[in-house]
Image (cartoon, rainbow, N blue to C red; front, side, top):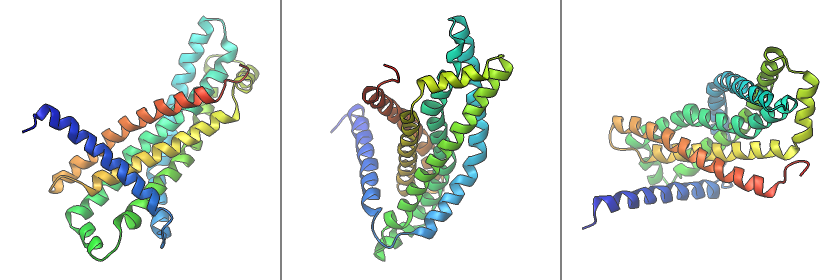
Length: 261
């Protein structure tokens, strides 16, 4: 008989493996026909509608915090001309994709998990399988794909709003020079910085969608179980997002040399 201390880590590893397997199933069913275009459009509209306004508001706050903190620090070390470069790069590379992922997981992911969980406890998923309809292709693929697409679009919006907010706080409130702000950014930034932000957004959107779908398809019994599954999906998505961010940032910094180095 196995010890509970050993059984819990084994169960956690099994859950990780099942989430990864669901991700592979989503990729395999992505190109199967018929493609659920109508379902994709509905999910795109829903996730975007619940995420755009919070994304804009949060990105303004993040841009302001980054600009204020870094602007004050750079003044202390005698390098205020680099405030634009540092704040913009921090927004584009780190803040925008993470904000995007948290909103996708917190707004869209919870809805995906709750809907699939309700279908599961009503045995609709089992009925689809009995009829020979793949719930992965019919329900999961459009939702994961919609989460990834909206994540990329939101990443662009958050980057623009965050950079604009950082510019306002640095130039207007901290009496910075507009020319120096823009010159510092152009001196250190490169197109790859925008690309890695978009790549992170794709990974984060897929991860949030897959985790939400997995918890929705495998909720604990009863209506309360659906609520528990939603909470678990949000927490797991947040943890997974930060782990993926560490890996992607490390790979990016190792592959792409800094501008001017």
